[in-house]
Image 1 (cartoon, rainbow, N blue to C red):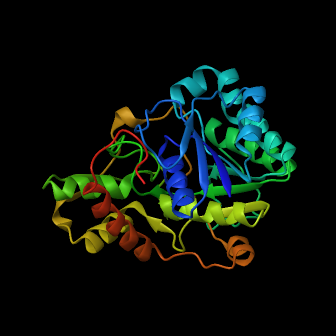
Image 2 (image 1 turned 90 degrees about the vertical axis):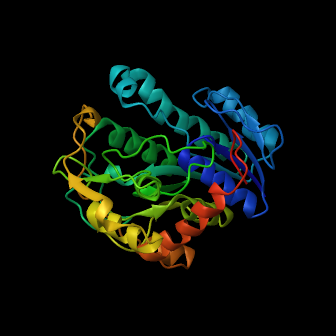
Length: 321
């Protein structure tokens, strides 16, 4: 199969690229801010995903069987500062990629988020009505509606952890969500440095963690089967930040005494509310794809294997495969 992926230079996108390549597919990914290595087992295109004509030409010329749209504007200040640009980057780009996929009869998957929920809808399943409380969640929800109306699939990720395969280092150590959380703890504690686990009513305190590479594999299964509707790409267990930190120490055999617990760094405050409990459940995903959500401990075990495999690889500036 031929798989067209937007945003392959990002955290989740780089893992979708890895999953597609490892499944033996021909891959083309768009890239905006990263430079790939000179030789890769996938193609890279510099493309404005908000331009419908350019997107349609790229997808048609590549002969895509599956289109996975992952690229986003990952800048909260810019998102809130320029609402028109934010709408184009999320909803406009989704419309461009979704209808380009329709035109070539390609399967379509939009990468979305557990932040379409408001933080009071614990254990939300694929049919739970969303209720976003910030602009990011609202833009993702509007994008979901476009994707579904075009006959595509929505793949919501939750508490995504894993390795950023397009960058040699984790972009940030901790944020108001769960992204990079496990890798940051491991990096700090393996260096003998303490790590403060944030705890506050103002941040995402409970989620259903996922592994980025497994998310990519689930999305490939959605695309390969041309499935439609909403899917939840996450593990099986809701968990707090504290519980996830302690579990990480157990699996990686790290010193629990280096963990600290306290309020978030004030500099990390977002100009918007953040959902407290974004835990998800997966009944439709399991039924349609014939799978069962992975227990969190198994995800961390798998991440441990990936972590040590990746840090032993020769460093490159692109998506490693």
